[in-house]
Image (cartoon, rainbow, N blue to C red; front, side):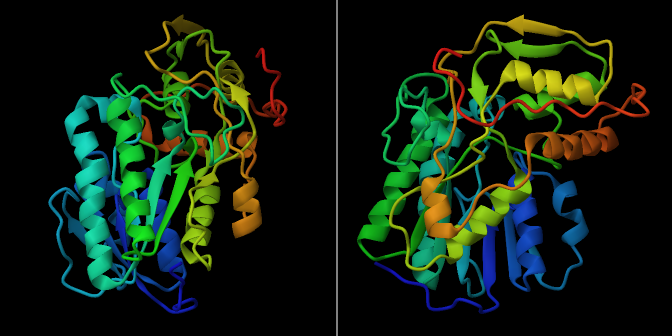
Length: 347
């Protein structure tokens, strides 16, 4: 098994997808640790605004490129984080072929780059590899229930193929690869129009529009604040020896979409109501990570409760979403956070 020999060293780190929601927070965290950061992004779904404050940082370099066409970097690289892929259904379904190629060809290009530079590699995979799970909560050894022909396959199967490629490179000792399976993440710098449930509900509430829920709203998700996720990514990259298997990073607190909508409405007082639409094809009914491996191997678990992270996210969107703001309560009642233990199987 490949092992790290550079712990504690100041490194040059490439972050693919570094102008995205999660990627930009990762760039911030790596710079704060004294590393040099090469941010690679095509701006297909990333935002220049996310990295604008870093443009004059002496240890930050922006490289505008698509990883499907990226073959080398003109300076040494010690680590590569691959976060380059559209991550919400409306975005990755807009160009499903490009999504699949980003997952497979783009990941391959970065792996070969890591091999040439003897760089450690972290692949951002996803809880979507579990599909609409028949086991709950989802452990890393669960093989999933994924449609290979449905409208989400470009992302779900693309990420599964990327994982297979990563572990082939690891098994043959060509690259020190670590794979993280990320569960629903939220926080500042989410795009208002990215189509994810947290941003959708907050933007609709701030705009005084009805909050849209697909299905009955009793389907569940587990929401992890972005700072917790980034801390987990860095710990997985730095852990020694290499775990040799995927690691779930997410918050095991499980909430129905109805509960999430009620929390948003309690933080953004409006006349909005909730409206229901049919559930999209292949949308998972339940999602909750088993994080025992993250606790054991990384000493990691999330620390930001949904009520706190959601407040920070609402405050962020209030600064970026145009239009008149509904009045806030002068002394808002705290958002009621439902239990974070597993829901009954019939929920």
